[in-house]
Image (tube, rainbow, N blue to C red; front, side, top):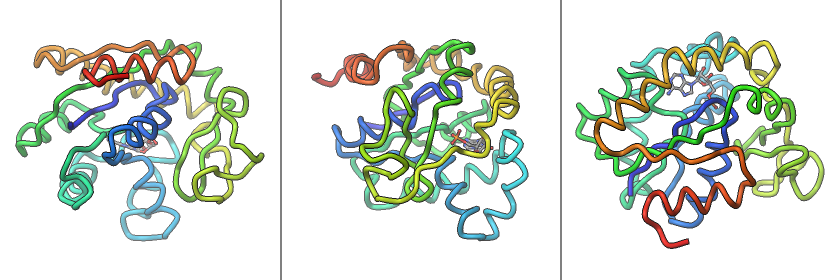
Length: 212
Ligand code: AMP
């Protein structure tokens, strides 16, 4: 099962990706998490993408495609994978197709901009493993500490209100078009992301033909 999770920043792709990953036993591949890790390690890749990430702009397609092409050849992807935050441009979607990477379903988590802006102010992420939390809707069991790896949970730099507005513009300008691209291939499944986490998860599983 090869899945793509589409949706605006903060629509719940990370949270839902982790849940589906645990349920189906396939990894979630988040380009955002991979790039943040590269920045934290101070690697060449990290230095190359820092500016884009901090201002909430898109990293060039070639950089993203080389990370993805390598990652999906790893052993844990042999039974499938969930792409979270990629593709984000038409060129990236076309590049996946050109590489012969089969995609079974594309789930778009639908949340309107007003709900996104409100939601982002409460979002927290693990500084080590990238797990997502929300101070009200989905808090870690112990405050400020990641349930999964025990590292510190913090506000993402690009979740500041001004950057969020820019990221939403980028989503509408460059990423939303992917809905019609995948609808044309008969793969698009729309799911309401503006509902409790568990309900959205059930809807996603139904949409991809998994038993709930
Ligand atoms: P995310 O964690 O998915 O919200 O991504 C955070 C940031 O990483 C984005 O604002 C971009 O700067 C960069 N990024 C992540 N995935 C991609 C992608 N597929 N294409 C371009 N930039 C990306």
